[in-house]
Amino acid sequence: MSIEFTFFQPSFGATDSFIYVLTAVLLLLSIISFVKSKFDVLNPSFIYSICLTGCCTLAALYTRTWDLPMHFNSALIIMGMFLFIFSWEYHGRI
Image (tube, rainbow, N blue to C red; front, side):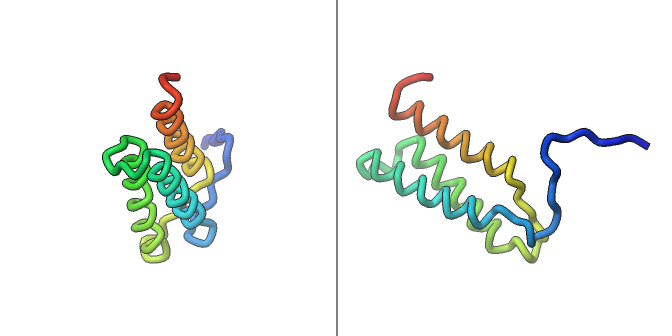
């Protein structure tokens, strides 16, 4: 028998899901990226964000069916990667 060490205590089940908030935030960030790139659909930050938004929307539609939780720390990693790509795209290399 072992004791698991974690920084974040995971919450299981679709009722504690963060996927709806993540989908809304990613949609907002996709719109900002699209406008900031002067409506260029081939901009890498827009392509990355709209693909993630599509995947999160699909996951949000089937959250209850699949019993698919989205933890807060996973959402922070996804949003952090988008902000990294967005800042690299518009402010030069980091």
